[in-house]
Image (cartoon, rainbow, N blue to C red; front, side):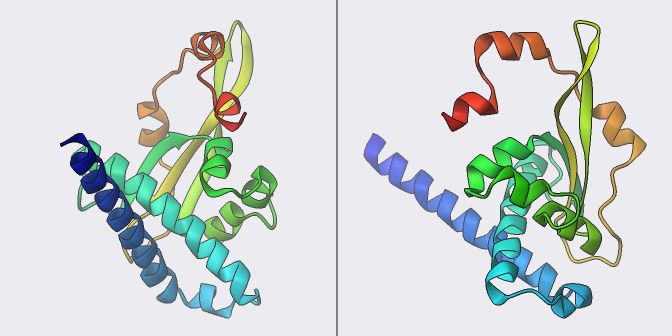
Amino acid sequence: MSAMNELKRKEIVIRHQIESIERAESILRNCELFQTLDFSDRKKRSITRFYGLLVEHASVYAHEKGQKKATFVSLFTSVELLAACTGYSRQTLANLETGYMAILRDLGMIDFKGHVNDVNGSNRFDGSLLCVKLQASDRKAKLTTLDWQENRKRNFQLVKESGNTVYQLKQ
């Protein structure tokens, strides 16, 4: 019976991934600026694939929070985790000028900013706040004051001591 449940779970995950990529393709297809970018087809497909992952990630988060019809969803994540999930390098995703995140931000598909936490009296970057557009809209994704207020404080020291970090995931 557990093998059957595992198969069903995999089918649901794959269906959700396909739906997320299709949603990303649809949103970007309706983005006039994306259509005019002078990138190779391969780079456009890579950006679309990455955006599809963000849509999937944000959709799951929204569903868990009861926001199934949200146009925009903001969440806390790390670029390293996104890189590990996609196989792209951190530089490919986060370069401030040419990274996929900067391109998607300029298109209005996402907004992001590094998050700083107090760790033993010193400021440390502990991840990023990310706002993702999940539905076609004329509005751009934009982090709000509420996003910053709602962001939970992580116990950075506990995370580090437990070894439960994205760096451990990559090894």
